[in-house]
Image (cartoon, rainbow, N blue to C red; front, top):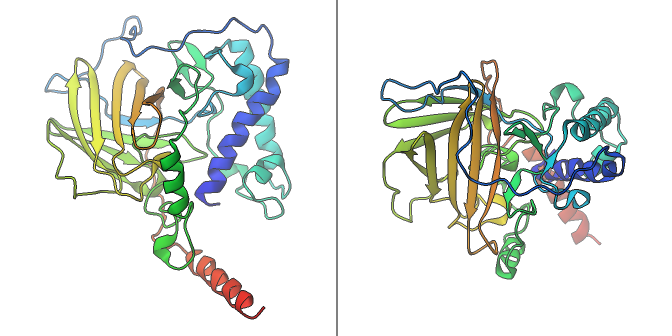
Amino acid sequence: MNCRSFASILAYTAAAAVMLTASLPGQTPPSQSPKDAPRPKAKNWTVPRTPDGHPDLQGIWTNATITPMERPAALAGKATLTNAEAAVLEKKGAEDLAEVDGASEHPLLAAAGSNGTGGYNVLFIDRGTEFAKVDGVKRTSLVVDPPDGKVPPMKAGARQRAVGAGGFGGFSSVKDRPLAERCLLGFGSTSGPPMLPVLYNNNYQIVQTPGHVMILVEMVHDARIVRMNGTHPPADVRQWLGDSIGHWEGDSLIVDTTNFTSRTRFRGSSENLHLIEKFTRTAADTILYRATIDDPATFTRMWAVEYPFVATTGPIYEYACHEGNYAMTDILGGARKADAETEHK
């Protein structure tokens, strides 16, 4: 599946939540949007620290969750779920996923554009089984700002720019194909920033020194290097993952990333995308992650996502994705065949 298919599957997950809301028990009044405020620490737990005195974020973590990116319309004004409400949706999500295994026709496959061809066996899908929990409460969307849980609209110029860039790419050259399809970056921005949960490979390993923080991304096996207390390079130096500079604000690691390429395009972003990430160790098994997206050329306002990274067992195995993967010759060869058939008409 290509990155468009994965995006469709995520959209299907959100749609499933909408359809199920009619059966949710005990609807509670709309809750307020989560605020970017200090979080209470677990009782009888203290933040582990590295020899230089900063919080120790090292370990292997997962952000897998079935919480949709945006809040479903049927849950408008409702930022959180009770445990009973979440259990209904989580049970239905597991049942839907089980139905896909070995099937060639299914709403999930239709959303991915794969009806009639099938897709991955359920064995290979590791999207999580629960809604993301923050402060002991399960969230209805990854987006927490704006409070409605929706990604702000794109500006007209940004929409035109996305169309002009060819959407998901043309077929004249390998370089026209999406970066995820070419195995340069993980699909759905798993590589980050921001580091979003997707269908599988939602694992990360953090290694920390006084001068650097390395984040190994399972998907496509990217390694993000955060340089502590540095400065960004000149604007003409561009990188697939941008340039990340970190500093400590109290017990939170703040990572400022700029200098993206014009092809990175997180949700249609421009090359001037500016990401601010915040990592806060809130429990022995939890890092609270918050990412703020600032791109005035693309979105009508800044916006933010927030969800936990939860400790998991390792190791992280190599993701054997290859630049110009095995399907590339078929993709471009099929396009040449279609071109030839058009010319002979």
